[in-house]
Each structure stands twice: as structure tokens, then as C-alpha cells.
Image 1 (cartoon, rainbow, N blue to C red):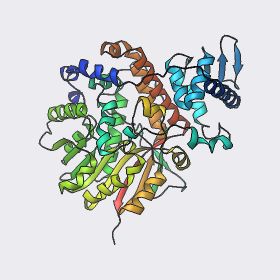
Image 2 (image 1 turned 90 degrees about the vertical axis):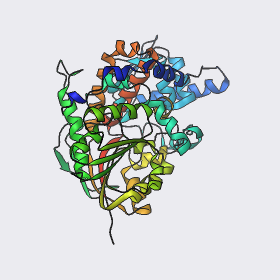
Image 3 (image 1 turned 180 degrees about the vertical axis):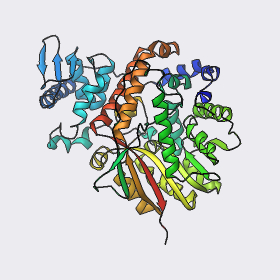
Image 4 (image 1 turned 60 degrees about the vertical axis):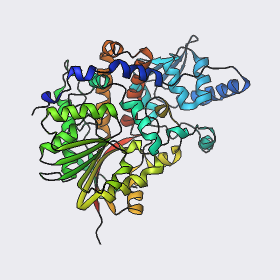
Length: 461
């Protein structure tokens, strides 16, 4: 069956859209008003001094209006329309305030991802070491209700993934894959560094494309998403007769492809909206007898008594939370059959930055992914070695591919503005999501964050 035949049915997508978008609007966090106080005045002054010092070392241009004062060494232009508001929000709320001052229009730029990429590449050194050590005292902590416990996890997932199936269909490719594509299989061996174990490969960066039809009819995008999935299935050894567990269903594309190989699939998710559409797509592809999709927390898997020859998961570990990484891998270890393999795709950050930011509350947590936190490859290796019999034996880095994936999503999202608004979302939502997609693109383009396909086998006596 072709990918085109697996596209979601328009009526199925539209069903319940009004209800979902109304819920989405209600769940958007509020922008706290600025209240002038001695503390606000002092923090704004400190923020202005630190920001100007940092920008002075960067290849960007910051223009403060209405004076026209220019900061930076030249490069992508940021315009501070309301400097007082910008510095007040930055001083009061740090990086959350930086993002929120973009949402209010206090600053803007013609090239959001390009501008953000520059500071992202030097984020660890922009603030003096003496102030970095005070981070734990000034950075807001993740709210208790966002911790990824069994009681909270479904609400965290629903906040993002249950917005509207139709919304995601507007900017994703025809496979409805909401994770990094793999545009080419070319790769080179990487030198062994901290956290690098097994076969460590780095995928060749993709070439950006801007052909006229790329916005809505980008065939190579769907092929790249399929390539990502097929490689993951290969790494997990999925063949005819394999019993496959998928943790995080998405909209069903991986389950369909595994079933096409002759495998039987048990796919679990906490998104009600994704489950419904995934089941429709799986049935339309003719694999309803091979794929079971279930609304289930991964922690409940051990009680089922089921075992699997292969466990696969695409960009789900980011929602697990650092307190539960051990539980996540222990559960996989428990349900993996003798001789089985595990392949996951994971967004990661450098180990030192992971340690420095663990437990913090970020703009992404507040506005996009409640409870989310990125592991490092090193901590994944430490946790699996220390708490399970799983061993990391292979890694393919593909961060540059995620930068290109996000660039295409952002362009598609902006091009579909009228359709997004017609679903009931508003201009603030458009601004939030443009910032989210561009901010994420900058993270991958700068190397501040990465994404890898990681392969595990079980250590045998």
C-alpha cells in the first residue's frame, strides 16, 4: 500500500476539531503582567547589562528602538521594539522571559531561527562562570504537577499531542511523522568521546532544498521519514514473525511499516487523539489484525506478562523525566525476550548541560512540552549499565537532519496560517509555535542539542 493511501481521512481529522481547539486555547499559559517594583527595576538593570555584554561578543546585530543604538558584531538582526519591557521580562523570568517578550512583540527579527542559532552555539559561555554557579538559586524549578509521574503523564502528553490531529496534518509530511527525518544514510565513524560507546556514526548533513513545491508536496521529505523508521526497524531486527513493542505510537506509521514486514505490533500511547487516528490509518493499511494500539503508561507493561523480540521508540524518552529514566529502561529490560534488541530515537544534550539544567523549568516546558527533559547519551549509558542488563552498542547521530526537518515544518506551518486560524487557533498560537519550531531548529543547527538512533542488546553471562 502506498503512503498516499495511508493519508488521514479529512472527515476523520475534522471530527471534534472545535472541541480540541477550544481545550487547547484554554490550556495555553498566561503571560504574567509586568508590575513595576524595586525588584523588577533592579533585575531589569542587571539583565540589560548582561545581555549587552553577551551580545557584544556575538555575530548578531541588535537594534534598540527608538534610539537606534546598535549592539553586536554584525549578523542576523534583532529589533528591540520595546526595550524596557524586554529587559524587565528577561530580568524577572530569564530565558522564559526572553521567549515571552517575543510572544508579546517586544522584539522581533526577520530570521528567527538564524538569529537564535548564534547564541545557542555559545549558550554555555554567554553568562560569566560566577553567575552560572548561581543558576540553581535563580532558575525556576519544574512545577510538581508537571513531573512525569503516572498521575501526571497523560495530562502532560495531552497538552501537546491532543491539540488537533488536523493541525499536525497541516505541516507534517504525508507519513504524519513528528520526529527527525533521515535524509541520507551516508555516515562517518566518529571518534570515541565521553558517552560514546559501540559503533558511533555521524550522519552526513542534508542539503537544504527550496524548490517551489517543497512546502506542501515534498516527496523526499516523506521518503526521509520512511528511511528513519526503516533504519530503526533494521536496528531492532524486526522481521516476519517478530513480536514488536512500540512505546509512543505517534500516528501509526512505524507500526504500519513493522506490520508490513510481517511482525505483530503492540503499540502504546497516552494520547487519545493519536490513538484514534493511528487505529484508522492502521486499519486503512490493512493491518488491524497485526497491530494493537493501547492507551497505556509504559510503567504498566511489566504487569502484562508479555515479552517482545524487539522494542522500538521514537523520541518518547524526552517525556520520561530524569527521575524515571531508570524505571523506563528497567521496564524495557523486563519485557525484552531472550536475544531481543532495542532501538530508540532520542533527542539529547551534552552531559554537562544536562547536569546544569536538570530539574529546571524552561520556556519549552511552560508553553510546549510540560515535564519534558532531554537526557545525554552518557547518562543513558550510565543508567542502562547501572540498573539493567541492556548495553548500548550503536549510535547514529543525525542532529543536522533534525535542523532541516524543523526548517521544513516551520515553513509549512507559516504557509498554512489561514488554515491554522480556521481551526480555531489564534495569532498568539501562531507566534508561540513559530518560536518553538525556530528555537528547536537553532538548537540542532548550533549543536547545542542532538538526536541519535541508539541500539541496545542485552548483556549475557
